Image (cartoon, rainbow, N blue to C red):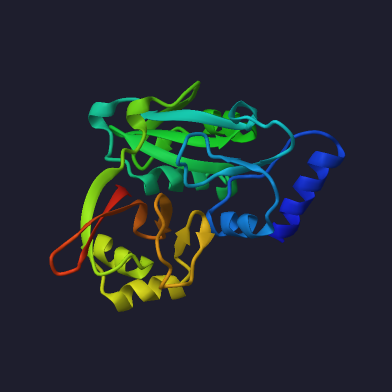
Length: 238
């Protein structure tokens, strides 16, 4: 069904000479989109967004995407609960909003920055007034504060090879069998494509998403140790 939806958007864009856009896509849907090889532009409201919208048409730029940014903050921060990603998302879903209408949620100092489709922004602003026991207010902002962007942590890890399962084991402190189960469970994505090959050899600048653990970017091999082990550099997104 999702593949048919992508083809419909693509055909409508080029038959009617207009831009068409998907809703927000999760990693599985992005993987399906990638194997269709349909030309499109992908954007989630900011660079490195995990949930993205696909745009079909000619000369599409980031400004064309129907994405709004909402700032959701406690009315009284002093007496507010400690709010998590799950808290923000749960309150939004309780309003009857479908997940595909919502993109990433970034949290800084107990304030949430939500990316959503333009068509749902007014409903959220008017309806979202409480998260957990905390009274909140929502409003649209023109751009995301740079400080709210998740900064990756550079790290060097010692591995026996650049096989993906080996590197995942090293980063997340897992056994090889535990890492293998992530592949068999459909939880590993390389550059937004589902990867079931545990022996995939990483290439410089590959972006890896491991559902339930996070993301990291593989930067490459730094050096070899005297015992022929490899030191590789990665950027880890918390």
